Image (cartoon, rainbow, N blue to C red; front, side, top):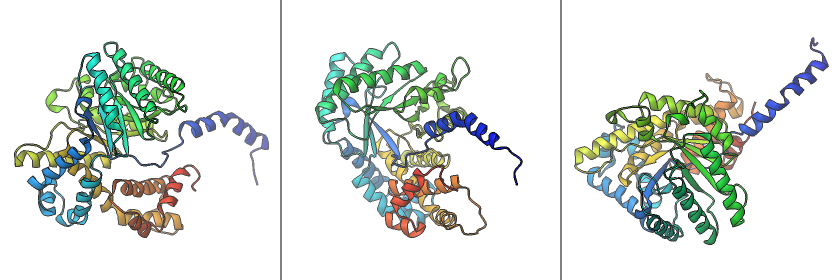
Length: 415
């Protein structure tokens, strides 16, 4: 028995066709691939073939000097010893095999202003060292498209992409970081530069992708009161991979005193919450910022810096920011530790909820399809980070890695 006419159903579908298209095209959901747990910035003049090995050595040296056992490290970061003992061997293995997941060769703040000839030379040397890189993700950070650095930024972008093309092509997980973006027009120019490079070098359309660093208040709210970051997603025309929050430039732009410029400041949380809203469902990922308190020096200073870094990374993970910046190899142990603890401590509860949902079983928790997707994503991120193994995930969830990645890609089709 129905009270609505057939014409109403037709008119409703006709009226909503455009928004149906927008929902499908602009909000496809996460693509389900790996996201690095961090990005490590290395100044271009200090980048060479042994950079990754050196960062790994810094991390291992810091541990062997200041926390030689699981018990000692657990006390430093404020975690139960049995928890750390559970993943302590995995930490050692990770530091030896993959200390850096995403490396960014920096031609911006970490590199500074140089003569054109000097930066040209460092582009050339970086390209030569790129051929031996083994990180899962890599890229460069060019200078900003503000007037004072615009020509140099585009010159470095041109030289680097051209060099990669001549070396055999742009690597699959290569990303360009565009810093200090203030207005949508800067994103539009970046897109045009990418298009022209692809055309000139006969690269497949969409090969050159970039991430935007949020380091100005105008990148959050425009002079006209619009949420600028949302407009940037459309302006990027599918090339945008992520928004990276810049702790110190953004804090300074917001007028926060230097002593209080941290990634957990309320002003930082406000900006990142807006980014989280505008990026949700679009496939654009998020990265939290860095802390400039480095674990080097005397034992007490290292322990304090580790405790602070662990706390901040763990805080970011709990708030849905699964990536951040690291500035020194000695920060890597606590980056990995926070990820391992975060993913392993919730395995039992998450696996039960996911199994219950997939089996349509009754339980005290009635999860929605969106939560099932989040649970699947939780396991996949844990797997990608090295916190859990494929065998553990299959045993806990009853699902293979392929099945869970397929589940994530079926966003909108679950019921």
